[in-house]
Length: 442
Ligand code: DOR
Image (tube, helix red, strand yellow):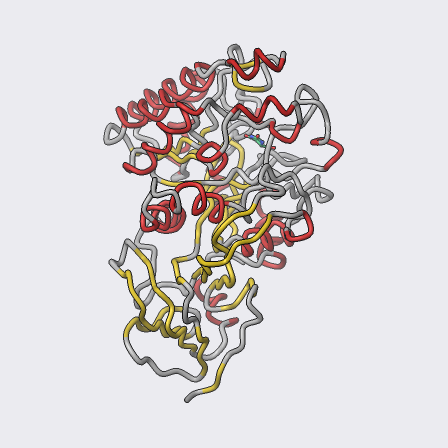
């Protein structure tokens, strides 16, 4: 599904009132039980006792703006055994996500216009949610030759990124930012310096005890500092993804307002630590690596205070034969879409560390504004992109319960609170976890 409201509108059913949900949208100042009328794929009205052709009773549920994930690997083209646009978007929808940005480290890499336009066409046919294509910043993600960004944009690219590897030369990165700016493309940056990131986990006590080679936090911090200096100088629209250290978060804070700079962190860096390295399981390998609790806490504070603008999952499916290996041999990355809200709700909101409204802001409103370059939320005229959530429900993360084609979730076996029960894109129910029964006009 593309971002075209026209397409969404043609697919939308007749008007529908979502009745009795607790509507929470910090951007619109909504926080209470009210009705929401949807019409032609858009929100028509928010208020009391609304009437429509059909209604959906949502008593006891929360209604949020649809979550937006600017960082996902749907492995298409090339590794459809791990994820497809159909299964990736099904996982996104099951997690309450209505918009997703797909990363370009596929096979072939998304560094030519023909690959971009092919993906855009497949998204239109196969995706349940709005999906945006990130093209590569450099050919082959090698950090050497810039891609033809103007042509990539014409072919439908939404942004550029060398995610998975990161750009190693500051001079090359600076040129990339300047070119992306003239092409009108945002740049998403994975910050890791490969001369320092030589290990497979965080270089700390847990790595030493486990006897596994580590990469220091400076591997991320040095690259983040370089990226921020260049972003401030060039004025390019730069988004630093998966911030995982206290120092990188502080650096983002210093540079905020000195350029067009935003940053995210992930659910796993907010809820898990490098203690898991002691399990010696390839499951817990991820880039950037899980950090000590001190970093996790500081990154959480930066998210709470808005220094880190939002959450992105880095949804990274991997085949079991690439994950069920010793740490040194395993592929890095975790599934993210389906556990993002429940993990953060359970670990941060229920424990009183983060207000629910800030979590909704960080998963929906803020990334939604970044993608839309404008207002995003629950207000008359906005696309009806919505997530219905049952905060009272608990569920156990199990392979069979996940829509993703892969099962490399670091939360497998955990009991989480908060379950997404319905996701709408352009007014269309793209995930139904409640057996929705639409009542007729009463
Ligand atoms: O752990 C990761 N896995 N980090 C990345 O940046 C890339 C991702 C992948 O593509 O598997």
